[in-house]
Structures are given as C-alpha cells and as structure tokens.
Image (cartoon, rainbow, N blue to C red; front, side, top):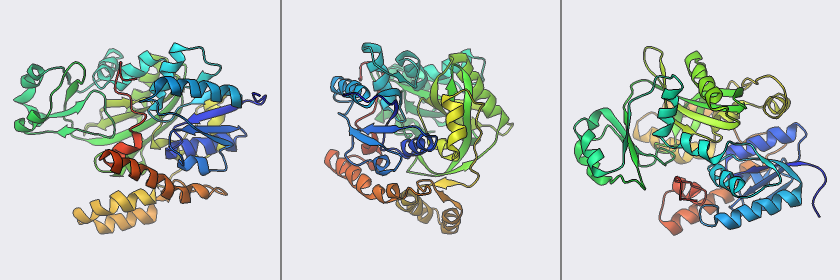
Length: 387
C-alpha cells in the first residue's frame, strides 16, 4: 500500500553529493529515499537514508528503469525526485514519455541535452550575450582537417563526455589521427585559454539563483573529477551563472567549468546539468532546504575549509604528488582538507567507501576499463538516441 507521508527521492546514491544532499534534507526534517544501480552505494549506509532501492541500469535497460522509478514513487509516497548524477537524462526522458506521479527537480530533456552538448552550450551562452571561446563542431574527417594546422592552439573533446575523458590538450597534428568525428560521435575543437579554472555549482528555481558555490580543484582523479576543493569568490563568474540560469529559466541543479583569464574576464567552457562537489560547501540544512525547496532567500556557502575525500587523495593525489615531487604540498593539503564524508552522528558512510569501491573495481576489471569509467558506465547518456 502506498505511504501517506510525502518523501523525497534522491537518485545517484553512489555519489558523495547524493549523500550530502540526503543529509541536508534529512537535517531539515524531510524523509529521504535513495535509489541507484549499485548494491552498496555509500549514501545507502547513512542515517539520513530512510530506505534504499536498487534500480535497473538506465543506460542499458531504460524501460525497466522508468518502470521501477514509477513503482518506487508510488510505493514510497514520493513527491519530488532529485537527480544528482547523469541519470538525470534518463529520468527526464522517462518524465517526457509517461505521466509520473511526482515532480523531478530538473528541466525537460531538450534543455538538458542542449547544455550537456559541448558545442550547443557555448552557442547558447553566446546567444545570452556572454563572451565565449571559439568552439568548432567536428562532424567528419574533413572538419578535423580544417583545424589540423592550428591544433596546438586548441583543445579537442567529444561533444558527449565526462571527467575530461578523451580530451586532447593542444595536441600536435599527428595526434589527431587517433580520433574520427562523425555525426553520431561528434567532437569540438575549442580555443585553448590561459588562466585559472573555476568550477561552479548552482541551484536555481524558475531562473532565480538559490544557491551558488565557486571553487577550484587542487587535486584530481587523473585529468578528470576533482578530489580536493578550495572555495573561491569571483563576481564575474557569479554574473555568468546568473545570466545562464535566468536566460534558460532553469529549475534544478546546474554546474559549470569556467576559465578566468588574466584580465579577470570569465569564459564558460562546458556545462554539467547535475550536482558537483561545490555542494559540499553547504552544511546548514535548514537554510539550504528553505532556499532550494521553500521560499527562502539565496543560501550562501557556510564552509570555509577545503573539502576532500581522503581515500581518493591516497589513491590519486599521492601518486600525482610523487610524480611531480610535490610531497610537501600533498601533506599540507591532507592537514588542511576536511573529509567531506564526515557528518556528526553519521559515520557509517566513511566505512561504506570500501565495499562501494570494491564493487566499482569489480566492474572495472570485468569490463577492462578505468575505475572512473566504471563508476558511471551504467548511467552515462551520450546524446539523443543513446537512451
């Protein structure tokens, strides 16, 4: 029998941001259900999780996934679904194709696809009056040949990709022989920009900014996802985010990779219409939830110390420090960084990292792919027709 009390469903329970969001909502008095594909994601171990539901992999079983989500919503009395990872695309498709008994905290699939596409996002930002880096769409070998002569001034990346996977940074012309862009698998060639990288995490409702954290990643898992985050303040970056969320009437979470040039101008590089690690700079449940889901004013970050996942720092940060002979800097970061999985009275998720990592490692070994690729293999969305 369906429940009568209303719950919030957070999907993508494998991600630290899903855990963090669950803790914020639970701390504000909401009943939180979590769901994902893995058997033992870290967020399922949290006291904030009233119940965890395992779902079919949306990338490979989209119909079964949509049916399972609908059944879960009805059984648990869910009023709102909040995606955190790339499953947002699969959920948006499910909402377009069927009448769901709850709201999803995300735009329609058309807008999600537009900003996720690394070419159309830059075009959208330009239409909104923002300065953008020159970005050329590559649909064929002929398109690739047209930019080969100045490849050392460019960054090449697939239109649909994540974690900086397959990125070619200012390659020599011969390196371009390894890629074969096509209409089904297009690439972009984007002008390389000197400057400081800034990441932005934002939440908006109907085009109004409700939360924003700007930060930089001092350590990464390879060239991709950050694992050590430091807050920054930048008025130009904030204005850019405000322009995009207002111009798209955005509702939901949205994140950006930005570049601040030496003259202070901030340019948009790409967009991820989902949660990213900037969420960890918010720790006040009442203020965050009132701003994001209620009628409260915009909430500002209340965490000042750098945030990190210590396990990831040992796996990725230490080898990088050894290669670059920057061990002293690594030790300092480990002293200064605050473990983002820590939460008063909720220690189980820290221990839950190990079985969660083992599950990802088994998938990586079975598919002969990296840990990072294995962590999202079942939820990836690579454009129209992929799910």
